[in-house]
Length: 174
Image (tube, rainbow, N blue to C red; front, side, top):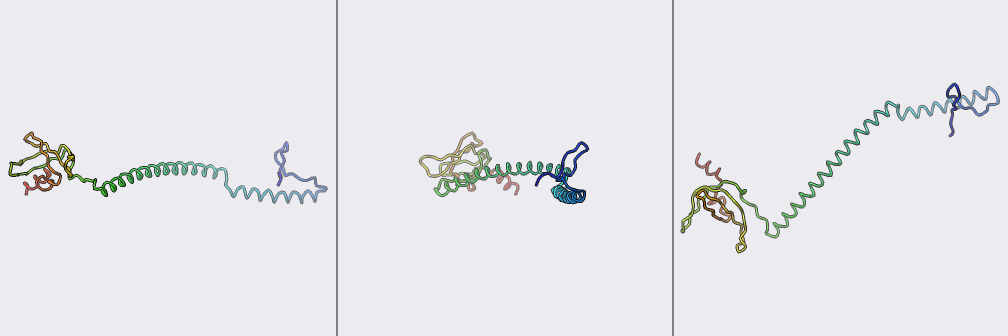
């Protein structure tokens, strides 16, 4: 459909199609008026300039929120992928018999009560490292003892002849 209006020196006006008389002019005017009112109603149905400004502001806010959520989601996916890789490596190591759960951390204080037929040691110490000897199939812990010596024990001694220092203190308190 073509334009319904024309610009005149006095402003916009409805455009008529060369009416032959006043009656035809009124008929064209009423038809154009009805079309113009319907077009105006359709325009108003899609929103006023104020509603467009508010919607544009809302769209901007929502776009920023969606972008932030998308970035957060990507970061979560990356963290999840890293975690999945670690768990997969642990599961593989465990299935191959290579996973060792250490009983304590390097730096933990311990109490030792290890007596053998060749002597032994009773006293305190601090875990200095864990290692595996190439000739033995188990893991050792090296403990710097309060007497200045370094002693090595299998990790399965932890909880038996070697206990956390806090447990010793709790036993003494009764």
